[in-house]
Image (cartoon, rainbow, N blue to C red; front, side, top):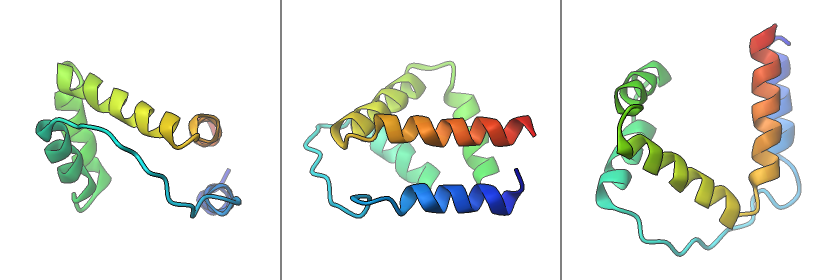
Length: 95
């Protein structure tokens, strides 16, 4: 798949009915997770995020952030939708 085709698939998935609905997530999140997550989201390019995550990967914080992401997906009923994203991404990387 070309980059444009992948972008169209992502755009289609994100345009599905209900994707703009607000989801209430009532959770207590450790400050360190919020700090790292905010830092990653505010980085100017994804390669910097990748470097930071690679550094954290062997530690407990990385595992905790993954669990937090999974909890967000579960609470918002997006586990299956996320699986579609992963499938599209994997298929694109095979090409």
